[in-house]
Length: 165
Image (cartoon, rainbow, N blue to C red):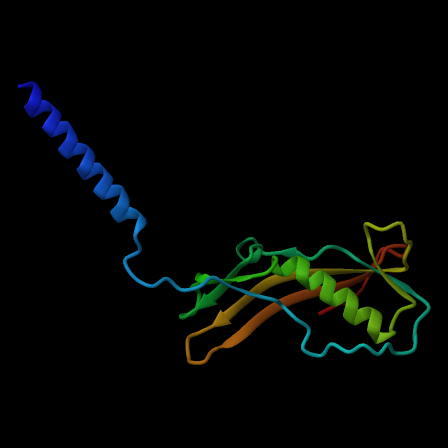
């Protein structure tokens, strides 16, 4: 009885080891995780002359909850979204848009200074950005990028909305 019990334990241990090893072995080649950088296609190192004397303050971009992630969203049908499994942004789009927008506005020369509202700088105008959508529309190959932003320029001293687009 004792030998039969030890044999059963040994067989059970071997079976458990085989299951663990099988679970660790891939069933096939796995795609490589890829990271993409959201970049400014019209980036330039030249700075234009200052047109306005105003200082512009940028608030951190607010983002629709679904797009506030490093996951890259796509759509194959209207009203449906998913995330790519092996493709991600290097950082959440809202944070990257802040950096790209500040850089583009500084180079434009449209304002004396461009700074964050969280800095100690005082400004005459405030720009609020809302990212409503950012996804790859893959309904038809090769697809296209879809971006929906709302920008509001306000004058905090006058408590007025200067422009919305």
